[in-house]
Length: 139
Image (cartoon, rainbow, N blue to C red):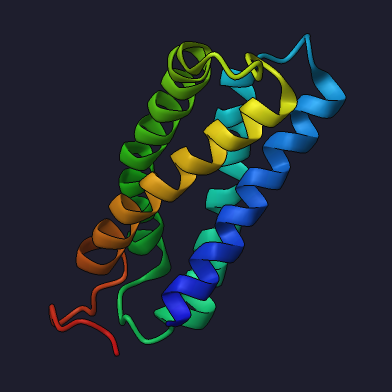
């Protein structure tokens, strides 16, 4: 349950950061770049929150956890970016509902992408990033 709550908070940071970046820097900053920058912001908050509240007794050095966290998140970042871009650039226009490339369409596409990426992150962090030094999963 803690993973879900902390993950939701990190996802909200990611989502809100992208909205803020797009609102302040568009059109100079593309949706695609805003998604990547926001992901890095959410990832940073996620690492600190997961380490403090979800996996505090993992028993691995912080540097090892950080490297693994980055590796897992690189996979998830690619997944989130691809899903968000495909949804915004292909799926939303194909629906023909008049939301093409609007802030609402961007928020929906990015939110769905974050939700999909959360599953990948969960598995990777549980099995790799924050597993205990003895290979036993933290409670």
